[in-house]
Image 1 (cartoon, rainbow, N blue to C red):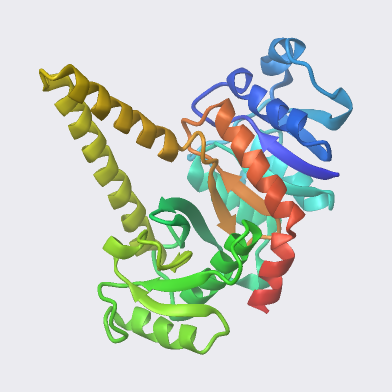
Image 2: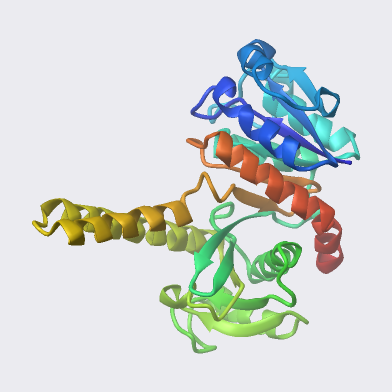
Length: 327
């Protein structure tokens, strides 16, 4: 039985709007157990309308909510009854709990996860996200957990990204290093040093990649310092939004009804493909349990997909593989 802890507080939406997601996942996976952390009164009425195996659901009543104003190192004492503290503490103390999923405030969720769960081999954890590329999924690691990263940090980001993608079903993931040029000597000193270190690993390292080619299908993992990785994904997001809105504007302004329908259909198909609700969340790599963080505006569908992702990663024993690579 795989046990996953769901923190339903701290998101933009109330727990009653989110709880159907975990229940949907539970009903699809026979060896899944769900622990729901939230104010029990918020979900009582919704749960009464759902059909599910109650023996595989545990509800932990929480009366406090964590937010970005909280200090992670002090939150255990200041908000012991918060869903964040109760959920992460359970993950730490219960070996059967394999994962924690949340749509809460990013900063406090990530920092508290590191503080409570602990780091693997005292390395610097990284945030990784999966984007849809030209030929499949591409992992960007680090995409925002660290502003400054040493060459050694970046090598560990690559190793953790490989463990993640292997657990998602990609054999011998191809790794590239984000830089401002494909040439080996391009980039700031830390990137050039990271390039040399990556060449000396047993990773399937294929050299540098520019941001414009990150999703072109030539790699499965893009390792980066957290600042550059975050700029990359936000640039991709902004470009996509601009294109989508431009296409919708064209559809609205055209006098050709058939052309308008084609443009609208294209936009909505793309939006569905890249919608964060259908893609689950980003993962914090480098802590001792699986931690998935969804968008703050996530919905029940976000939790459903995060739980299915966490279940797969737990079944593939990703944490053990990651620890073996980091040693």
